[in-house]
Image (cartoon, rainbow, N blue to C red):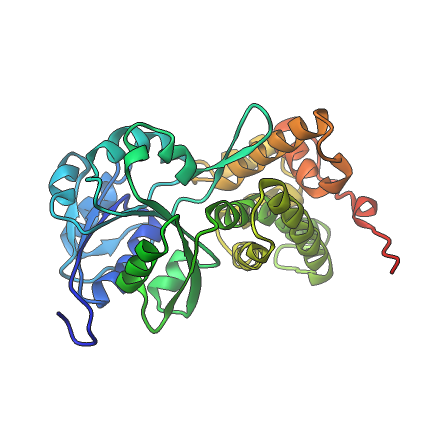
Length: 353
């Protein structure tokens, strides 16, 4: 037992992306053995870490003493682990189901940082934990997830960050919280998996929408010019639509706090802001994607899937398209080739008490 009453555990991180790698900081500083496994796309990252502990995409030096593994060494890294952290992007969800889940012992809890949803034929949305639980290997596992406003580089720099761990079993969540919580990484717990996962997934689509205002201002007045009225208006509309979507999936209303917080931090930096800004500046979707070639853009996946689900529900008469003007405009831009033309009038409301 370590000082403070904490037991040392072995935590295997599968996926050496930025967020998973940033989470090695609180885990290692809590005295746990940390094993970081790269996916087939992470070979250069693992090679670099083995040389000098420097993460080439996170741009931070990880703690000396972390053990690094290439993907073919994954089983060795899992052997004897007390917990598994899944760190793939949305693009690696199927790979994780096929190549990782069958290797996880049934008594070892899994917690994932992957944010996203999968739209079904009937317009319903499925969380990634639900998808993994629907597989043969996943059905036997204790699968949990992390949601909330937290960027990887600021977590690595120990800026105070507040997140929520969600899963079906509160005792498992309390155990996982004990592994990761520090004086700068603050963890709440929730058994509302659908609500938490939906709230933090949707922020990617709406962060792209808010970032359009950044590009529009720069198109009119030059690079670096910002106007916050328009950004705030799109932010508010995004929160309104996210709240309606939360209600559609049956998530608790209070989860909008997680979605709004995650939306805020995403708008202020990162890949989603870049694509939204380029589109607002007037680039076509194809040209904007070409300029960001090689960058993982989960916002495109989330926006497309969410809009596709909403349109199916509109066709079925279950929702009104007028309730989601920002989402549908983002979808029209990235999937319909339409130019940016914010539907401001569609955001106006009347409230009579």
